[in-house]
Structure formats: C-alpha cells, structure tokens
Image (cartoon, rainbow, N blue to C red; front, side):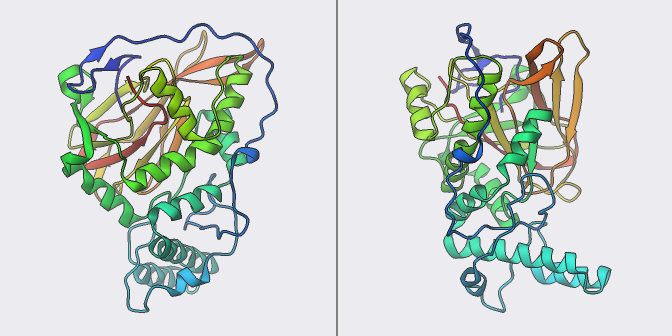
Length: 358
C-alpha cells in the first residue's frame, strides 16, 4: 500500500504524481444502515466456521459440508488456521486440555474449513466464507474504531501460496521500492489484470457487504457519492474516469523494513474501505512489523492503535476517514495506516483495495 500523505504514484516507476480532488459534496439525509440487505447469502450453502469463531467477524454457526469433510482421505495432512497439521493440533489440544470440548470444536472447525476449501476450491470457499460472516458485528466495529478483524480469512496453505507469488514477476504490473521515495523501507508489487483467482474472489465477495457500510458512512457524513452493490459497476465508474489500473498488491518486508503512515488514494473515485491479510506467521516467520492505525481527531492529539493479527487474519479499515459522533453531530476522523519496523525475519501482506488507479 502506498505510503504517503495523500500522494499518488507513477505506477511504472513509483514516483509521486498529481492528486485529483473530489468536489465538495452536497448534503443529503442519512438513511438507516441495512448491511444485511447488501449481503447475498445463499441460505442453502454451508457456512465455513474458522478455528477462532469468538472474534468479531467470525462466521455465524451453521452446519458445515459433510461431503466436503469426507472428501479428504484419512491419511492426508490438512493444515489448521494456525499453520500446524490438524493431527498435531488435536494432539496438542489433548495434551493441554485432556479432551477439552472447546479444543475439539476448534480442531473440527479448522478441519472442516480446510477440507471444504480443498473440495470446492479456494475462490468458491472464500465467497461462502464471506457470505457467512457476521456483517452487523463488523459494521459496529468499523463504526466504533475504524477497523475490524476477521480471523482465518485465508488458510495457512493459502497464505504460503499467495506469498510465493511475489517471486513471479509476470503476475504484476509494477514494483515499488519504498526507500527510493521516502515511503519507508521494503517493497511491494501491484497485480496486473486478470487478477489471481484468490485475489479476485476476495475483492468481489468483500465489496458487496462493504458497499452497504460505505454508503451508510457517506450518508452520515452528508457526502453525495454512493456505491453500487456490484463491484463490476463501481469499477466501470472508475474506468470511465481514467482509473483503469488494478490496485491489489503484495507487500514484502525484511529486517529493519517499515511502512510510513499513509492513505491509499489513487484518483477521484475512492472506495472508503480496504482490507489487508497477513500472510506470514508472527513469532515464527518474523518479529516486530505490527500493523498500525492512527486517528487524527479534531482539535485533539492523534490516537494510535496497534492491530494484532495472526497468519491468515484480515483487517478491514478506513482508507482515509470515517464518521464519528461529536457534540455537534457527525464529523470526519482522518485515518492513516502503516507497519512498524520489522526486527527480524520476513513478512508478506496481501492488500485488497477496491478502487482502481489512474
């Protein structure tokens, strides 16, 4: 994600370029939030329950696919969300809890998730997973703090496979070395179209429910722009305005690297929410490198939030500002994000931005 204070990139070389501003919005009344209406849930589809279902954003309890669970042979090794084989997870749980019901349910949920993804494919599994998330709880977290954590959005196997794509230059349209432009230390690459199937599935399936939240935010802030429920329609608006370059990206950090506080603005049309998924395992693959958010409050000092993420966890957060209630009603709170200095190891992150770039 581009580290700058509202600066743009030349997407071939990574140099800053002129920013385009949105005209002052007209005022409109704020309708009530109806996130559920924006989520296309198939009632007959199984909902995949990740191992950490207690965190905000975890799928609501429902029956998982028995057929998917049976599709993996008894001798196969399946990874849990924590990255360890299921057999190792069950053994460790038994040793620690002697048949704990919670540990057994967590292991069974992780097994069901991994097996279902194998049976129907990662892209289809992601769509089902996203449809089953508790979007009312996610909306409440975003309203309160400007971010929400979704645990286990990708499995450990999917994280490793996604990080390995960084070494495949044919997948990307440009590479940015942050130190050359004062954006931090480390580097990242923007995917080219067509996007990899996992990236495309995340972008398309997340957009619908997030569009409902984005429209609510714009209504509360009395901003004129609204967002179509289908991502293809929103991209058509971007492309008509000259924003035609894809913005999903992979970021790579090594020892001493960091990402300066910034906002990901790529043109006139800006979707107000984005997502990042941690592909590496903290404490194993790297140390340090925490995801950081700052909130600039009117007539007050900035507030800093360190967001705890595990491998496969996704954080959804505000691109540039979020609504907050004050004594005089709703106002904009400016937000920026970055990554603290990596003390050791290697860290990869997938960034999902919903508007395209000029």
